[in-house]
Image (tube, rainbow, N blue to C red; front, side, top):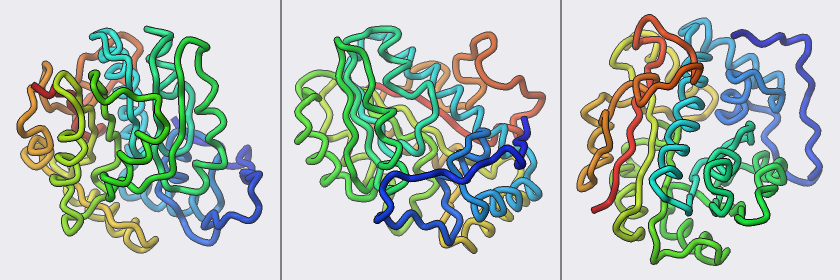
Length: 280
């Protein structure tokens, strides 16, 4: 689905003293544009359209990711998980994690984590959950998991003695190898009790290597590193965990449901791996 640029309006942040990086494209705002949102600037739309010229299906990738998130979170809430930590939240797009899981179980608690000032501007929409549950937003850098965990614990709404679902959706392809993303994930999971879950998605160049190289080059020109990974590389993030069926698969193939995300003829249109695994 395309976005009608004429209807786009510049977002109006309510924190004028914050540096929102309006002079350069930002990956979170570009993602918002792919989803048809309005929380983006002209510079983001220009960069996003450059990506779309290289790979027109990028909007589909974003929608596959979002639809997977809805299914995975409903699945985890259905498994009895009542605590969720969503790292790399991005710009709020309803339904958000708390809205999905609290529809299954109103008592669910969710902590959102991001370090993007523009996400903080719109964080109020992440804090309006059910009366039975709780939601919170913390400012944290995903590449510093110990600091993120400390910030989450300070909110005092997540009990680290009970199972927790950690979501790392569309995040790790923005973590270059020099930041050791595998150690990052291991640090998060080591802090969670047995019975906890990891849900992640990760872009891949397996199906369309040429266009994805063009995409990474476009992001690099905007100052954002992108490291797409193969299925084998993505599967490594789940080492030591027990994968839920159907394992690590292309996003639209993970427990598909009627009317949940776009119907695709080719996996290249998704170019996104997804998986859920339990800590034994």
